[in-house]
Image 1 (tube, rainbow, N blue to C red):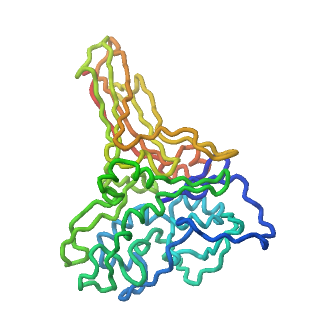
Image 2: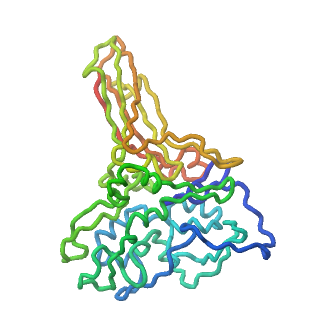
Length: 406
């Protein structure tokens, strides 16, 4: 799911969208109209409620599929339109229609139909009013129908089981698959020299080890569960609809969804001795492994990053020696957008961060502490966007403490 960012001094719209100077509109009557050819330029075609349903609303789906509905409501997909950061950036420039093809993907959810681009310019779309625009459905973001409704039928893994109150069709191999995930989570485009979109999780996955074993995005992000799909229905093999990613909540009053969160990273702390005496030197290795993610970590939005906070602390938690490491991407945005640095962790890669500490002669009750924190954006970016204090910036993903001196 794409998120919008505000980069210091410039507006970023869409995935990593950085807008320097928008091209001024002029007489474009003579410009060639270029068709939409890239998959992210096109919304999911208009859908109609399947026979037996009145609307495409997730709420109507939830009247029977109650557990799945509650999972979806707690997911980032359900918050795609109302995401505070997205709304901040959208309010600054809503001309980048391409962004909503991932935040509200159905034609039914979009106020305009995009027919092409004048001169190939994203900022000069050829558009007309959408007579089928449904504002209430737009508010549902990435709603049930985005994935599960096509051509008047609800797509499912089983097809019609003779008990469905609506039209059902068994999904084909290309439907309800990782291809659907990658339509938004694998997008690379240059909108202008200082405005780029770079979401490459799909490519990272294909290059990784687990895709070659037949696993997909769905394997991890939609875990299997056996349950009835509706009250008093038969128990079936289905999947969780929660899609945990970074685990960072979208609002300050939400809790991190730790019940479903299994970090891709694994943290281990190894010490040269089980316990140390005053005056000795402690040699510590902090091992960070991308154990479970089939893609780079962090992935997705280039503004995501990890910090690895290492410290020796006393019995009051005060640090006697500490250091903080950074893992992520660094980008230049002006005068041309380009990646300057990328030290993300590859699938199954292990990083060893050594830490050496001389134990003081008067030491007692010392511990070594390692904390891995996942960050959505820097504090500076959040402050410029007006999101500081209303949008969670990070969570503690992993933490380990080991005693050094009793």
